[in-house]
Length: 356
Ligand code: COI
Image (tube, rainbow, N blue to C red; front, side, top):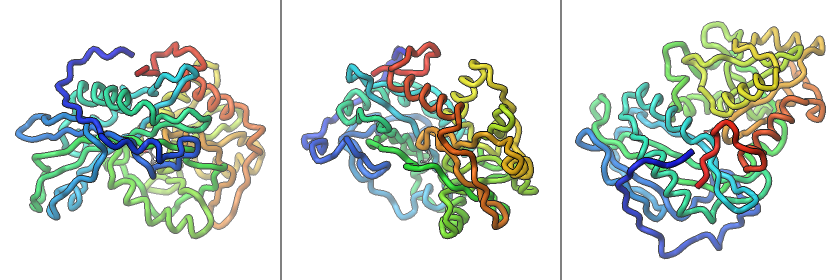
């Protein structure tokens, strides 16, 4: 992936790097932020004021449109170090495209490619020493855009801020996860915003997820809004089941986030000749497959989560234990393949890696 885009960008470097205070060998997901961030403002119908500056707090009006009416969207992507110490970023063009789809759905302006991709490249170049090299570690990159009008009338904001900031990260799930099939609450309904990476989707998921935590689960398995009979996704990741050798995962409809790890896993599966069915797995179908031993694997796929093995599924008060993680050939293989591609240990034959 080459950068051919012209970008009018000012760069203010920090005079006080915090890098020496951070243990990059054991970074905790989402807690520490690198020295710099990219910032751009949308006003008067165009993006302006594009700059890289020291990572810092921002001040907001109490009437900030985003905090009242929720026009806020974000992305998540990762950068890695290869054996030569070069920085590799995984499929940023997909995040760029998805962010703009989210923007359209949430009635927000789209971001020009030179700002997202060009700004990201400059930011990663500047903060390259923050990319952890250890296995399981990465630099998590968070682009975010939100409405900034200081106005509490209900209408789309006329001004927005776009930021990209980064956080050295370790693993998101440190062990196989225990999920609860949600049959009361809903993450997304047809015609809603489920396919957008909109902040409000995550807010709506918090209460049911808290209830699931209280019952000892790590995550909720969201089902369809109408009947709660079909599995859609897991909130922090898409979800895949392997039953009788076939991968079954919900298709990209307007109730499912179009995950980039999801897309990558399905492409690898098809290249390897593994059958794939993009349809919503039935809850009854999954439970029956566990009971009759035809469910071979279940795993979440996401940027933060990478490939997260599911160890237990809870449904209507019953716990169903899944096969041992060591006996899951596809999810273990695809995890390894993706790690090898992301870290430059295998050739990037698909154009998935942007080298900084
Ligand atoms: C990601 O995987 O990048 C996400 O945005 C999920 C979030 C819950 C951490």
